[in-house]
Length: 198
Image (cartoon, rainbow, N blue to C red; front, side, top):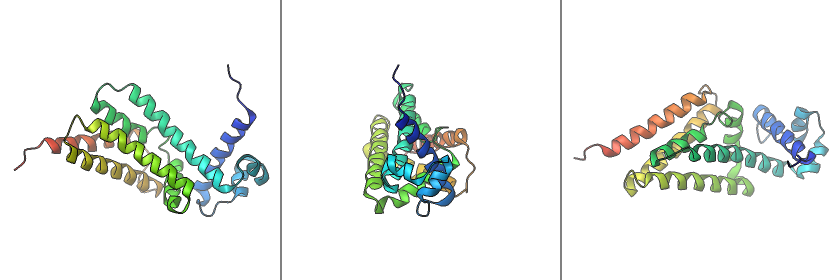
């Protein structure tokens, strides 16, 4: 069995502290000292592990993307049809470990800052491209290309909207309900594609 390194433990602690501090103070305002206070450490110790606030924020965003990726892999491994895979993708975006008030708040703040931070912008592009690729692939057998593009864009906009509303405390955090509603939106979009055309 592989031993867990002290550095990895400390990194995980600091990333968790960053999530809490950014949620409380906001990405633009949070300081390394405020992150350190969450763990009882010092700002100097965080600098030792990450080198800068920017690198700590990038590591925190990578952590969130890792949670999404793990949920995707878990869900897709259990899916057996294109529709099941679409459900799996939607479910992953509202996974219990990811879709929390704290993580929604932090995620939305990171994406808002991405145009001004090259490292975050790169992560955002990769995340969007990965999600689009999964949706495109699994919509292909179910609808024509034009409809697939519309449905994909609608689903991505819908998920972004739910996350944004949750981050603004406009919606209560209920991952099971969010997954159910996202599936219902997909079902409506697919049903509308099957409706007679005049």
